[in-house]
Image (cartoon, rainbow, N blue to C red; front, side, top):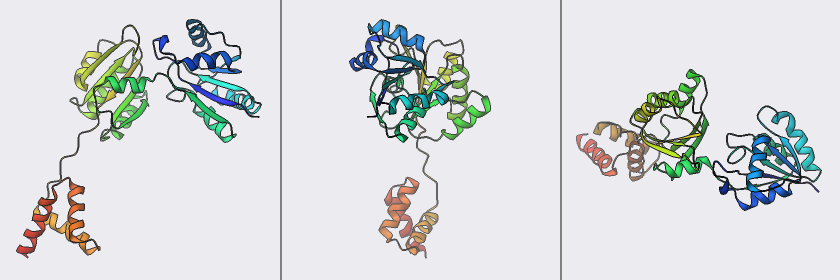
Length: 281
């Protein structure tokens, strides 16, 4: 029988947030693959858990070489637990390669849900949460970061980013340039920890606040781009758009509705333009 790969979420700050199932998995796993074995030791000591299984390091520098070893253990029937320093494996952390390799090998993959910096920051940001994107860490080089921000400048959904404390000031400056200084945002620092702090406001103000230095683990939430202003077309241009759709086979009512939706205009305005064009013709 093949084993099972368990992805376990770990606390992002407060150790007491650890889910009960995490303690069980830590105690019973045959193999524990940890991003940092020293942090794992501190976590298990804080939780009062004594792992019985073999503990291996599994981080960015060795995951390519260690993945086949873990897959071999899984195919041999082992229960392998994957944990990272904080939050869920694979989310800007090691894990994706192992999950993909395990699935390809026909091995069952399951998860122990845990705290998430992404969702916690999103909920605390006071920005729209009905639709959002996770952008992870931005490129470190200035030009690459500017290009990455330009690509999402028109994104209408709320965006969530991770950033290192020593880069947060320049990142907020770059965001203000790419998104506009008035775009609403929130900088969430040290979530669930003793010195948790959430600063909300326009990106320009947050950049000025961060200029003196910010410490701790940081998640940035940025509001989506506002809707584009409706195109300013003349009545004749609106009527021409409808006429072209009619010529392509659409009924006039459908063509009017489609043009109105495309341009963000009331259907009545497009209808009046068609009527005006007909009378002038």
